Image 1: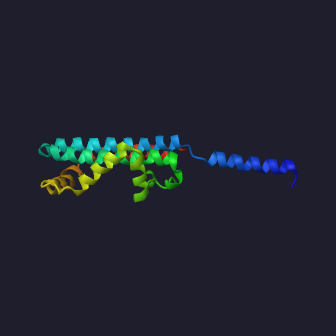
Image 2 (image 1 turned 60 degrees about the vertical axis):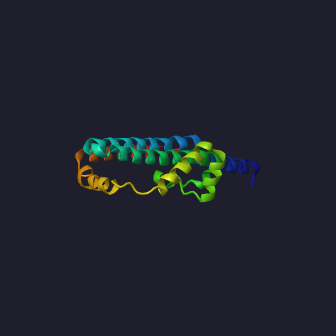
Image 3 (image 1 turned 180 degrees about the vertical axis):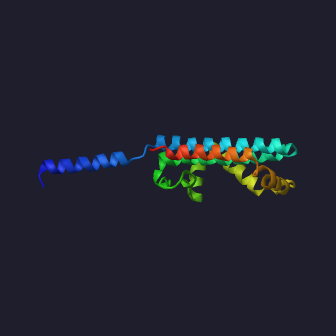
Length: 171
């Protein structure tokens, strides 16, 4: 192979590699768009629950806090692993499937991020607390009143549109 052909081949490989590389900042921004859609969905759903069943506001707020904590945990995981170990992310999958981390991965992040460790401990505590005595009643209200409402369907449509917009971002 002539020298100029080798240079040309190397340049082609370099160009393909550079174009195929995914910017960690772009990946993080894309995922943040997704988590913002999740936050908006959770906050809107909580408000809908409170509007329909005001007697369940305390429980709705409790569930909202749990969900927002989990969203922030995933956001921190994404930000860390997008920069430290992007191969751990399944970016060829839909956004909701990007993270598939092991216990060791999570322990590693907890050792590096005090905020992550704190949220992780809070999430564990929330999972281990006993079920709320009115939780089953709220689930029935959700199923029979809220999820059948046009307000719920509109909120869900907004969430799906925001999620699709985040999915459409090319990194």
